[in-house]
Image (tube, rainbow, N blue to C red; front, side, top):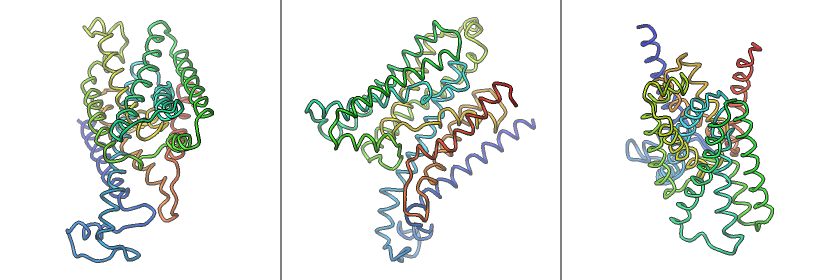
Length: 349
């Protein structure tokens, strides 16, 4: 009974944290806009100029066109990366598994590089904006799926989880080497765009891209929730899961598809954001002290949204008029958690 109350309280706190960070992400930026001015700009209060003489129309444009989409992308991206990370940690029974560490993000990056750098390299055009948006997403899905398929094929033969982890890192490094080759051969314009993309950002997603990102990630998250029971069975080992009637190949395929949609789509439009997928599931485990995916999956989704919102707020350096690459912030927040997991698993503590 007490555990149930504690779990509900923890979820309520997480929801409050997400709401608080969402509001803060909209209010803060290169210039602070008070909440009352936002209300006034949208006709919910008395109309007057904002800070520094900003008119209601300008405030409305900043919030509706820049800050609100950015906050939405942070919520969707953080939730998606966390859910994919939890699925991979359970599937590979490896606490250090994640879309970034196992090379899935590297595969998505290679796909995007082939589309953004390879197409211009051969003197071709990526076409209209809608074709470009779909092309970037499709290239990321194919790249992520190819790497994940290789890792899953290897995991069927290799039983040592550390070997699988090292293999994923090597495959990711190979993908990175191919990307570097494309960068070396590419002209300055596409190269600059790609390098900026690799730094990670939730603020460069356009309206048409958002229209692709949200439904695709929503589909991946729905699949993650539907996989809760199979993931719980996989925790007890594949042999036990088989005796309970679980069809392992079908479940692996669903996890494969969900992870590809989630990690591939977020990487396509936000860049290869590291450490969220690997660190957030451990944060959820620490908060709830529970291995049941009925709790861990929604907890990881919520904690992922909160973490990327926090990283986005920090990356904008409120009051300093500068924006840091979000990968810098996710690394600084995620690395201590990963180190803690490694130390605990090695029984050093």
